[in-house]
Every structure is written in structure tokens, then in C-alpha cells.
Image 1: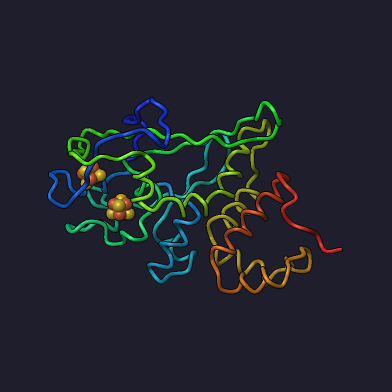
Image 2: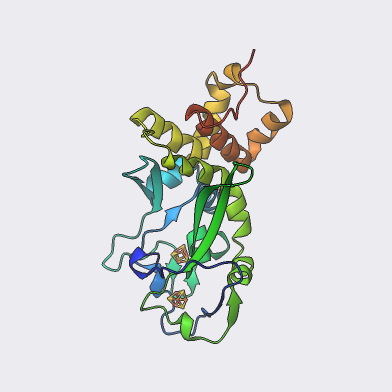
Length: 255
Ligand code: SF4
Ligand code: SF4
């Protein structure tokens, strides 16, 4: 699953039609859930750590590994596979995915992939994000031989990816900064990025237990939400990352 080797180099729009069906009786059932690199988004991490009843730190330490992107120097988090010969996903069983309702965005999209480009609107000169899709066609996946009709849009709806895309939007904005020349992150900034974007429980402690609230002006309503709402902490993490990377004035300093 998700190997670039099997990515079709055709850009697809939301209307693109295809046939696909994945079900328990298919000969390749769960074959896509072994020996794969699943990059986790910040929202995936929240869903998974809550599903497993863990803190983000426990989840990240026990179930993930980090890779630093060579070009952009951003840290990316990947789900750790089992250390058996097949390198199975820790969540796969003979019955399928045992965390199905909280499965990561990449598993939801499969066999569709999504990519985004930042462009300049010719008329307004404002940056706009263009999203497009592609198929990942791996030889073991027999789903394309089945007879169920989809468009990319109806597939997205069926797999529930909208909420994941909405939640991760601020993080994706940060990833676009790789297009800026000479902006490689030093170790300190990589650590800040990792904490603020992936380790939500630690970032919450950082907000409430360091000098953060002496420095930044956070309104009462937001502050209240931050106490219990992981997605609110995640969004503040995106704002903080953009602020320290000097991308946007996303936070207001106290006067
Ligand atoms: S999380 Fe679920 S769907 Fe994704 S690889 Fe693991 S078992 Fe398969
Ligand atoms: S049809 Fe494709 S996605 Fe479904 S189980 Fe088989 S390999 Fe996985």
C-alpha cells in the first residue's frame, strides 16, 4: 500500500470515475495491510491515541517512528509495523482492520492518493491550493477488477475523509513552506514542530505549564476549549508552528 512505485501518473479530479470494491471475500483481503509505510497526520494521531486510551506521548513512543524529510527538514511520523516476517500492521486481524472507524487518512483514501499544490491566482496574486488525486494500483490489489462504480468524490464521502482533510489543513499549510528557499529547520525547530503538531498532550502541558500564556494572548473561550478538546490544542499547535516559523502572525503577543 502507498508505494510510489505503483502510483499512476495521471492527475484526477473529483469527477473521475473508477470501479473498485473491497470486501471480506476478496482473495487479497488484508494483503494491503503489511509491510507498508503509513504516514500519520496530526489528526490521525489524535484519533489513534484516543482509540487506544493512551496519551499522545505513549502512542508516539510505542507505535510510531519519525523520518526527517531531506528537502524540507520536516519531521514526519509513521506507524510502526510488527517486527514479524510479514511486517503486519499492528491493527490487522483475519477479520480486517480492528480500528476501522479510526483508521488513518491514508488507509481511508486507498487506492486513491491525494496531492496538493500551492499556486498563485493570476488575477488576485493570492496563493490558492489546488488538490488533485491519483490511483495507487498495486499488483496484489484485486479490488479494481470488481464491479462497483465510484467517482473520487463518492469514494471520499464513503470513506469519511473530509473531516481528516479539514482537521489537517493547518498542518498542510506548514508543509508548503518547503517551497520557500533557504528555510531548513534546525534541531530546535524540528523538536518544536514535532511537539506542536504531533504530541498534543505534551503541547497542552507546554501551553498551561510553561510561560506560554504569559507571552501570548489567548481569549477565554479558546482557553476553556484547550483544556479538554484535543483538536483545539492541535489547531493551536499549527498556529504556534506557523508563528515560530515566521510564516504568519497567527498568535498575538501580550502587550
Ligand atoms: S490501520 Fe487498518 S486499514 Fe490501515 S493498514 Fe492497519 S489494519 Fe490496514
Ligand atoms: S481489494 Fe485492495 S484494498 Fe481491499 S483488501 Fe484487497 S488489497 Fe486491500
